[in-house]
Image (cartoon, rainbow, N blue to C red):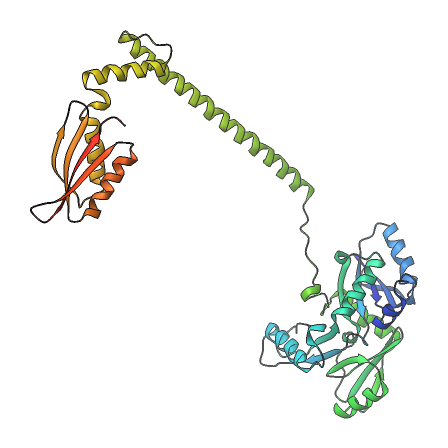
Amino acid sequence: MTDILILGLPNVADLAAQAPDWPRLDAPYWAHIADGQMVSSGAGNGWRSVRDQLLGQSRDLSYALLAPAWDAPVRYRAFPNASPAQASTAGRLDVQQQILGATDQQHVVAGLPSRAGESFAVAVTTHSAMALWLAWLAEQGIASEDMRAIMPAAALWPEPAEGVLLGAALGDEQIMRSRSLGYAADPVIDELLRAGDGAADVIWMTDAERDVCAANAAMQPMLDLRSGRWAVKQRRSWDGAMLWWIKRLALALVVLTIAIFTVQMLRLASERARAEQAVMDKAQSLNIEAADAASAEAEMDRRLMQRGGGPLAFSVPASALYAALGDAPAVSLKTLSHRADGTLSATLGAPRVEDLNPVLLALQAKAYRITAQPMAGSDGQQMANITIRAVP
């Protein structure tokens, strides 16, 4: 089981006064928990020796930090008709409304009741206190990922019986717990609370009882001040074997991509060579002497033009025209003629001039040269005499 080192945080006043001489600042309280049992406890810098010993033995070590009650008092709230999550939110908002001063400087954190209607703690501290504590912990070499929680020490004691204040010493603080508050003891506040809560007695816990409360809270933190802007950012850890497979899969993907690209290029080159050879074979059968396929194709087109075939044949521009008419159902073909020079003449009709435009644009998109002369038809339709040059 992981070793847990409970470490009380210095109060904010001492941190501010002794900065930057923080390494010498004593911890008000510390305790070592191993296998769920309290092994040792004390105050001062003895925790450093325990830490060094555990790290020297390569033990897994985590820290449970205790914020002083003076800087992080606690209020207790209960909402019988709310779910635990709703109660936690309502408790935080309720306490925020009661805070005096600038609320943007306050850090309010609510615990979560284990069941509906149960009392739970709402801690109040400041953002400046959180910044000082985290800076001090960093100075001690304690990383964020090694912290189990930063808990308010005022939330350690159990709920006392009706009419009782429960108290215990933690370092140089005497922490009191009533049914509604957890706070650093003060004679004036104690008397007011005893009067307000109807408390007649103060029960002081022994050091052993105090250590049990601290150990239970450390093993199962119910409230963590590291929330909101102070929440620990989770780091994604990658297993070594997973990284090994990811690297190899990435390499395989790169190799496969290159292989596919290479195969496609070889196929295209092969198809191109086959097509060029077919052109050369055809040219040879027509007694055309040419150095390459492009020259042979040019010579074939020249001979076809002389005979009025090839691109000048009626079927080539006519098929383009009929394809364009197929996408324009409102346009009808009135007349059609073909000249020896490859020019196709046609008369088109449509209800509107705008209906004729898609046909003309479709022909132009196929690189044909178009002329159009609009006119009004005798039947009220819009007409256009067009010519289509058969050679793009």
